[in-house]
Length: 343
Image (cartoon, rainbow, N blue to C red; front, side):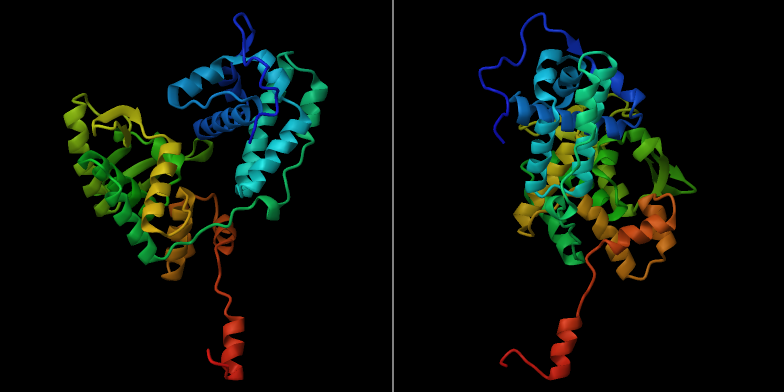
């Protein structure tokens, strides 16, 4: 998307007042996952609308702490927000993603209005912008078969260019394909979230809305993480403790001290899916696939609900109902009529 602001308009000039979005946001969104998601969407909005250069990690956080107010005033308006949401919809972003994107920008506008940097009318007008219709902005969720999950995990190893990357990718994809974790949950996991409970390896998961849950960890995941731990300890001899469970890897194969970000998780999954030639796959598709495979295998819905960490079974029932369902009526009718391929 080309910038909607004139390319001759400066992004910022020395002495411009700045707004600390990172400091103001926790009062509106206490969850760390939501805050990171809002930072991503505000970043994307400013890249698309104002033409700023993309940033990642600590650079993005620094940007969120010092957003130039003149830039925000030029970029925030109802027409520009409406146009941007339309772009997201045309990219077939999921409806929930578009809703979250809208919420991020409207929250920024509201906080700026509270601080007196923009007028209340602008903020109110942006809140009145509706998201595109579901059919215009809904990306069809994938439900991978067991064979496709195996292909994806094999591809995760195949795309690795170093032994450390292979170990990291193997642990990551095993966790996604068995434990139904969200990508933000993996990105925020720390080594001290691992423990033994009654001789069972478990992982403490920091989920949405500051909810914390403990999940039994398959032996295969525990073994993969142990091999990954050995590799991490070579490059980082510090006590692991609060350090990231899964990390970025430099081009030479050295393991970084920085966590593999939620975007990094997405990139690994996308690259593995491309290599496996199974089409576009997002991390959340693997969460769907775990739920679908367990349902297909006859697993009680209560167990699936506990794994997904839903508040109640009714949420899980709605979640499962959105998975692609078999609809064989036409096939059965063809058999009733006695038609075959040569008719």
